[in-house]
Amino acid sequence: MTGSPDTAAKPRNKRGSTRARMLSSAVEVLRERGAAGVTIDEVLTRSGAPRGSVYHHFPGGRRQILIEALQFAADRIGDVIGAETSDSAWDLVHRFVEFWERVLIGSDFAAGCPVVAVAIAAPDEEPDLTAAAAAIFDRWRTALAGAFAADGFDESDASSLAVMCIATLEGAVVLCRSSRSVGPLHDVARQLEFLIKSREFVRRNGVPRFSRQSP
Image (cartoon, rainbow, N blue to C red; front, side):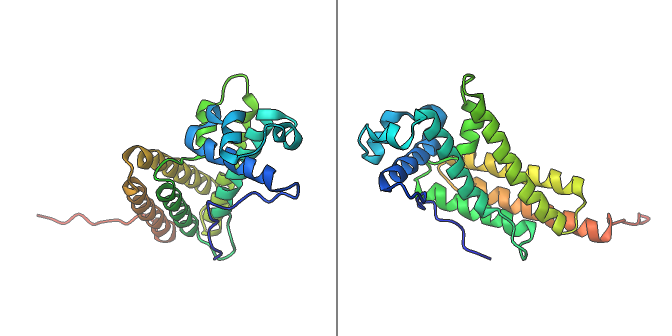
């Protein structure tokens, strides 16, 4: 199994460190404040880039910065649950939990999921952001569903288990931020492990039948 990506990883870009700093700063703001918080002024302040850098590196302005930041952040999370040949579905879920524990603690519980932030708060005039978030969630679901299918689950069960895992873990991240504790993430992880392993047992052995004993 490969190591999980570091949340401090910088975007690779051949056009120079200024563009990379700006994009990295935009990702940081997106995780903390959502789409509305990603303004040109905030990106410039955090990155230390001169104002003329905006239209030099991002000719599409704020919209381009926001879309590229969303995709970059989503790719880092997607790498965590990108299935490998030897990975079971639980392996991927466990890696997701470890990733978010590091992000939450490392940011002092300031950083959340950028895709969730965009999905629930993208303004009406930016429907492309909502569509991008939907596509990202679908990509994650496909990766997890593929792992469940490789574990032997049929297509329908694999897909629904993947949706449940993503929804539950994303909800746990929200609870962790509000409570400033990784406790909810650990609680959810334990219940997901029990459910996944129980479903695996039933898949292999069928539903246990208990004989009724006379009093």
